[in-house]
Image 1 (cartoon, rainbow, N blue to C red):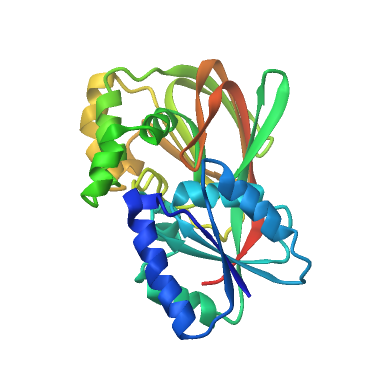
Image 2: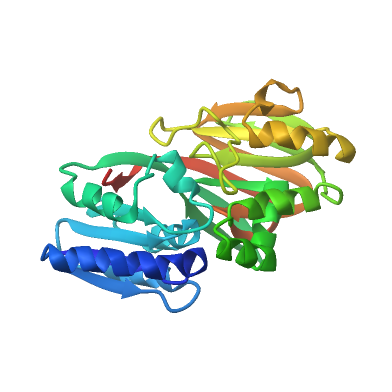
Length: 309
């Protein structure tokens, strides 16, 4: 029995058409399945929790949706050991699919999942912060960070531009457009970063820091071109100390993954890191807004997710 969590609104409605195609395939090949459809924001998390409660040694769970749906499901899962996980991307960003090289048609992706004899363990991340005196945490599959990229993700969540571009099949351009818009007003902050409990590193005028589990975020921007989700580490990309006018000229290099040679960008591999800021900055996990914080801790969960590839 395969359990599908389906977000029919993902990708500006593309997910609904994809599910109809997948459902026809499942019926034609007499494959036993049960579909669970999301009805509101946060529902995928609850559905994943229920699927994890199924009393079986192995439970096959397949997500049909975008990166946001994927993140909700991961944060609803409470028994990673027994879940055999599949993913069919239908969103606008699809950064997880890019990183994992899930690039076939929906039917091809489904066939690949159904035919997989073994799972591949991949890393996830966990970010924690304090909100109103309570410690909060969130699992992520792609990236989590603070600053400009997080602020752009926050804007994109309810952006009319994203909805319009989704209708044209150009949803991934949302993040680049919003980044350009934000370059001239972006805040910076003095930061202190500690990698793997080692020496504290001061960063002046930090623009952003992103703990990358996959190589790209924001609809395909290769923040950490060498990052992979199977090495037990983050590739942490940090941008800092750049005048606002200069960031406009550096953006094309970032979008093409050619930014690593510039002094204002650092990439550091580590298992965990923490960030302290002089003033609050936006925090995101897989593009989902977490809050405005002055302190956050990030750790890699090595081999946490058993995925069917």
